[in-house]
Amino acid sequence: MSRVLAICLALAACSNGTIEGDPRDVDGGGLGPSGDGAIARTDGGGGGGDEDASTGPAPVPVGTIAELLVPFDANRADLVGPDDHSAMYGKSPEIVPVPAGAELDLLVQDHASDETPRAMILRLTPDGDDLVITRAIEAPILDRVMGLARDESGAYFVASGVDEAGAITRENPAPGTYREGIVRVVKLDAAGAIGFDVDLDTGRADVRADAEPLINPMVAASARLAYGDGLLALVHGNNTVPDGGGVRHQKAVTTVLRADTGAVTRTSTIWCSHSFDQRLAHDGTGFVEMHLGDAYPRFVTLSRTTAERVSDAYPLFHVKGNLGDNNTHTRLGAFAAIEGAGEMGWLALFASEHTTGTGAIEGASRVAGARDLAIVRVRRDFDARRADENAFLDPALPDRLDVTSSGEARQNRLQWLTDYQTSDGGAVHAERPKLVALGGDRFVVLWERWARGDRGFAFSGTWGMVIDGSGATVVGARELTEDHLPRGDDAFRLGDDAAFVIGDREARTLRVHRVSASLEHRVVVVE
Image (cartoon, rainbow, N blue to C red; front, side, top):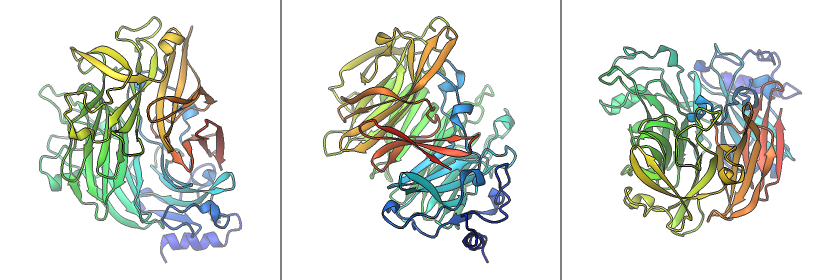
């Protein structure tokens, strides 16, 4: 009898939807080591499609968060603000969302133990106004989750990486070395059976002898995994082999794989070094990437990779400051498609200082002015135009910001959504910007508001606004919640709402925040 079937049969005998004798209780434990293959609990319904389960029979919960794992708690464990060193870089994912209509799949890193890496795929299904866990699959991972994707059949793809920051030296790993157990991509069906298990570093080397080795994945960055048109793409931060002076630099690496077999088809896309944060999505024609670069190039960049070609790197926003200065004074947000057939096909959101200088303000070391929210509108066919001209941007963007970037004068065209520099005298800052398209020409913008006081910067709530595809304000900015936004995970569309998920370590719950197109906010607690 398979381990998956055995657990499902055991579940049927339990009146409370959990497994009798389950070794994982609220104090820790587990369903088995991640390397032994996936283990699943399922209510047997839902299949792999995107049906709205709220219209069918009442869902059957298969467990609780407290029984399954300890989630990352952004309200306790990720309190970095505008002047913190780590805020200059992306963060590794913790609770990765993949919506399925009104249902939601999550890849959740378990923080019960630092010694035993563990993660679960959880399916959340509506039950009235609540969400309950109707599927729980223990995913085979290395140390840290990197991404989750799902194809049309409902198959899952899980990317994970090793935590090796403490082991990297000039000599280790040696140049030209391709190693097992650095980055892993696994395909699972809805019952947890493994379809393929790809070791990515050696798989890349099998395809291309000079492929960039995978070293210290997600260093000073994040990671994203996306599916589309039978392919997978994984982007993440990476250390390079040592240069002539023995220094390992940081850059982004993107790998493209076949979703049916796991075979690597491409080992690189655009060059971005350093790349301190990344976003990734498939738009129906190819994989679109967004990076925060500090050197080569020093700008927020957009690109598209298809089966035939890799586009140039298109500068959405030139970052002020010297070449390679890790402080970009900028936070990466997201990009979202504009509906319809108009010339403008994308909104891209970021937050950057509303000033041209780089000298720190009084009482800070990394802040040179108020960090405000901004968008740019990008042509649908941006990659059909020259990257060294601004013809791929909307010529109607109303605002300008002239900066010196890597020693060159640059003029940014953009549209400011906030003006904390003027309205609050530079004492307020936007952090962790998020953008969610809701359809109907409505976009929800989320961010954290931080205010400077006598003792540094203090968090003053998560805020939101609603804009349309032109950037015009539909619903003005207001505070939504005192919960933090997840720095390493994306906001997303769930039904008709924008949503984001954070964990509560003490209560052993997940908190699903939902924001409507009229900016109505509610929290669904998943026990």
